Amino acid sequence: MIRYLTEHYELLGNAFAEHLWLVLVTLVLSLLVSALLSLVLIRSEKASNLVIQLFGVIYSIPSLALFAILIPVTGLGDKTAILVLCAYNQYLLLRNILTGMRNVDRNLLEAGTGMGMSSWQLLRTVQIPLAMPSILAGIRLSIISTTGITTIAAAIKAGGLGTVLFSGMRTMNVYKILWGTILCVVIALIADLGLKQIENRVEKKLGGMRTEA
Amino acid sequence: MKAVELVHVDQKFPNMSYKALDDVSLKIEQGEFVTILGSSGCGKTTLIKMINRLYQPDKGEIRLFDEEISKKDPVQLRRKIGYVIQQIGLFPHMTVYENIATIPRILKWDKTKIEEKVQEMLHLVGLEPKEYRNRYPAQLSGGQQQRIGLARALICDPDIMLLDEPFGAIDAINREKLQNELKSIHSKSKKTYLFVTHDIREAFKLGTRVIVMNRGKILQYDTPEEIRQNPADGFVSDLIQTMEDAPGTGNEEL
Image (tube, rainbow over all chains, first blue to last red; front, side):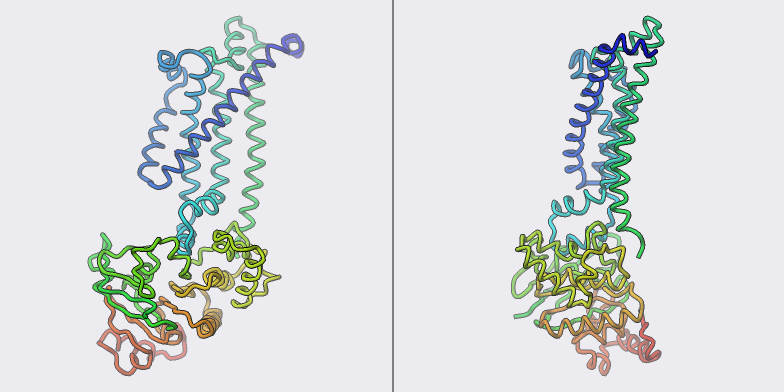
């Protein structure tokens, strides 16, 4: 097992790096998209529910099917993969960002508006900071989900650890399958633990302020 | 020049059988402390939310110092009006200092000026700056929180203060203290205060004039003595009766 790792260090390392790269690019892009969408959607509860439901439907389409549908449009490779992964992430991110911002106490918003804060100032200084725990939870979920689904993206030649897994399955190479799985879990675990840590810190900071007087 | 003037203001909410404000006209002189008294649903909160444009009237005009407010930018308008609500609405993730300094920071005041003003405000509401400035709202009692709410509303030296049942959720002893302090802050400032309450004793104690409202209409608008001696109708005299039947408890609520 260890020998397999030392002998195929390069193959596994490359796949790992590719995988990490795909997850990162997906995360950055989907955060940008969801941030923009949230800014538009925060104004209308109806519209946000509709859009979240729409992404919920997309989220429920199996990834292999969605990749296959898009091949005629965007072709094989990482572009198609990232597009699909971003679409999946919107469901997780939008839901968390928007509920986080909506759950901010209405009285705070009324007090802020009443004293002359513009809706943008309220968003920036009150709603987003108070929604941070929920936003971070969304990011954590989306990294974990992306890490998993990216393995399937190897089927459309997007690279990553999925390549190792698929070739392991074809050749019945248990070591390959095991190492592919372990490395995936490593990415997900590190992201999970790291973000949990940040979440706890933010939560603690907000929590200290919320202890009932 | 009147500080506040309402001319035939009408407001109807979709799920109410009567109008929240029914052809209300009203003039308030500068420097008055006007309390608005009525039971829930009488339109008293609607009335003050019209003044800082949290609500838009269906009909009618509202003028502050002879200026029609519908022609002004609501955000700019609100910065010149102090606003205090029963739920207080302090930002939980900001310290006392940051809460009070919110609007001065937006207006990009000089740092030392903000510092000085916050100190002055904390002294004004009876809290020692050193002890309280770095606390978070959750580390304060309800009464202290509302003092910060007052300080936050007063810092830009607003010409008009709108207070929506600010002491409604505060215990009787602290309420009494806060009422006295608010009264003395007002009499030093010469600004115009509008204070909504459903507590008749509070309304008569604080108001230089009292507005009695029911079902969207102003029943009487006069000094407390005048209302007590010459109630405008049965509703008002019943109201005064409730206060006189149980003197001294301080809890007469509609």
